[in-house]
Length: 305
Image (cartoon, rainbow, N blue to C red; front, side, top):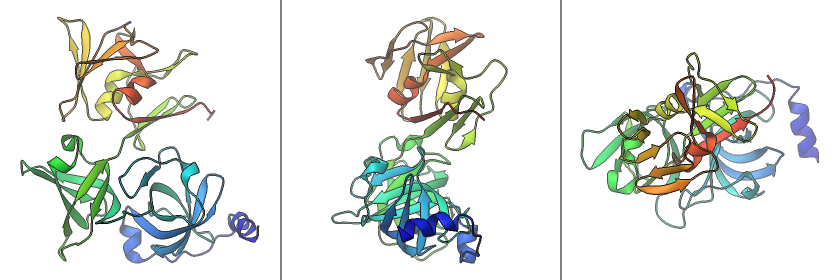
């Protein structure tokens, strides 16, 4: 109880945080340790890293994954005493203890072999046919990833988020390493109905005239082209077949027809509860389309501004 009271009281107290000069310039910093307290929607971590003690807030956009294989976990899976590495931005509240919004939580550790790390991509090199090289957001680490190790390596781009497994880093500028395993994390589409805002991975989409969020009372419909292209897909109208084709760099092919609940992904039928529709001469699709066919996370906020 003393710990909880201390945390609540600290919200009213502003103090100076001991962030190093390097951490202030880094886009992504971390604390590795154990969970000291599990709060309503946050965890207190004690360990080493940018801060020895920090409260990180967990949001629907936060990736929580197992260090062993990168599989997804829920907030309820996090327990006091668990070993975790929390990744967060350098915008840290100067409270006691400091507080930040979690980008990712890597829980546990691999039973054997290299450690798991969260990585946000600043740039991608594709010169080699057998691998890609990704520069992290802090621009101090270049990771070589063999294409055979990463499903849909062609879809990795600036802003992508990965879990990569590596240990040894060559002392260079930037440091260099080779991943023994890698996993591309799903993108997040955030939909705020009251504000009329659609954002992808925290970046708001510029909606043109006639593009908006449609709440039918049964589902939420989103304009297909602007969201799909924002996710890195190509959208084309097939006049001959009277359908819309959606493809990505990895070769995934999705086909849909207006007023049909049956979609196709790589030749396999996927039936959803709601069909695409035309509004203002544009194609709208239900939010389930992005979850089930594009494999992204959709967070819908029905709150008022």
